[in-house]
Image 1 (spheres, rainbow, N blue to C red):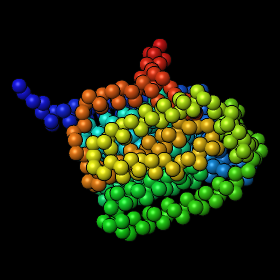
Image 2: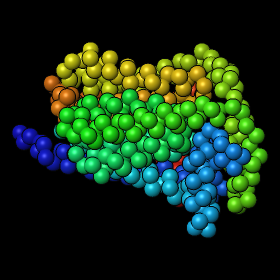
Image 3: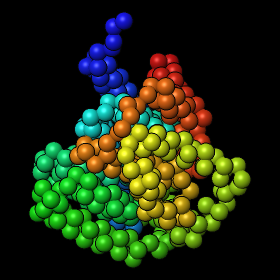
Image 4: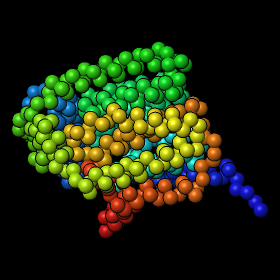
Length: 387
């Protein structure tokens, strides 16, 4: 009986993965396009357009930059933001795909790139959770990890620049700093390129501290009239202000009360179920390798930086995705440098059910589960597109 050619199998896997990633990218980008046609989404683009027209406010610098760019080129701020989101999205998909495929186990690519809470699946399953400002942080970290592995300093410093933009744009991105330090250690950048490792760590840390202090000092409730007026004057609909911008008029205690109001037995059970689903691929991968206890501990520790977010906002699905992205980046970096070795070949008997599960169940960006997941949403998008 003929045995399967490993090279042919690997090639098929690559084409399958690339086809899936292309489809995922197109669906998420299409969502951005629809948002633009509708005048912008009050969270997905609204958060990017928070500006300092009313004085210095939390998350204001990035929106002010977009307004300045749009004024300079004579364009609409919403168009500038939407185009920027799609460009960054393309860079993220390419860099993350290249990062994950640095490891020498093609079957693991499927488990990492197609899992319930990774952005390639999660953002398709729940478009309302897509292209938020973590898009910038994810891109920066992917570029940084890829540059560290390949010792490509242009990629590495591009990653530093993009990640620094993310921490200035949203205070929660500061919580990814442990992931960046993990990349430095696991790619052995501190040994192979000490100056690059040390300088990049200092730049990111110092800017993150400054950005966090700025966010704390500007976190009080503010009047949003002037912030919104700056956008309306440039042709945007006032509905763009009824989301992230409006939220600036509330203090942190309001977010905590909103979280408490969302909690009940059903929501907590749903959260635990989908978090377990999101972690299953990683538990399976860890079961194949050495030092299982250490690796499980590392997986748990990667969740700790994001715990404070659960107390201030109801976007629990996004917080899960933060953890899963960090775990995927760290695992890919470790595998690429030989710090994670599998002892048993992954079996399609387990891989296929995990991939199917990923496509049929994903976190809701707020507390909950989206049953039908990316598969159902993709079907809806295709129906919408061809109608």
